[in-house]
Length: 240
Ligand SMILES: [Zn+2]
Image (cartoon, rainbow, N blue to C red; front, side, top):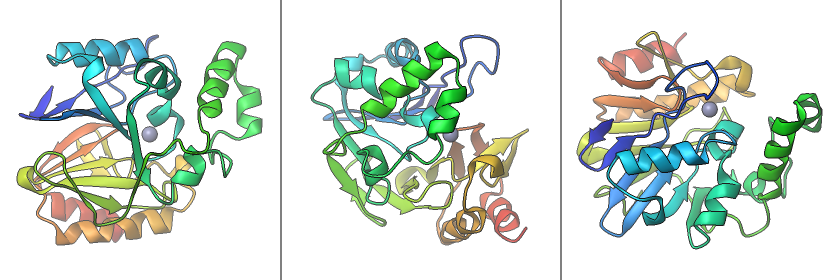
């Protein structure tokens, strides 16, 4: 689904049962090529290729992978993307870089969690972890930076869900690409999933900066699009 003329919701889904559009990766198309914002679980590469084609493009046009954060469901296809797009740049926030380069252990995929996975899943996740090597992040992003995407896209550091989590604000569209800083549940905007948010207080404080922005629509990786009283909804979340 197109969110704007240059921004497409790739709506990735679980293969076996589950939600058909559980993971809302985003494709940005600019004159110099495509930017994939987040990239699904391990095993979803073919689905990403198909969704990009359905949007009228080809995966070979992807020039950049922009990760809002390190979680498994956001960087899962990294090894496949690297294999097919060896020239692709990888952009992420400074505080997420050490995790994406293996200098710090992945926060949520602990050795214990890895051990508890069935063998095929464990192998796929290990392959993802093995791709987190020094130099992996080719552009380190800072809070407030204005990226040359969609006529200007602002990096917002929204830590709490992970230390270097970012959201992206596209002022020309009054659109916030929230990553996992918020979710949409049954049509309502909500704070990040508590079970997967190590620092919930910080995550909620991260949202306060959004009250200063002119936002008409919020697009969440989990739950998709929220259109409505954005400022009212975010106020309720931060003052819960
Ligand atoms: Zn997620």
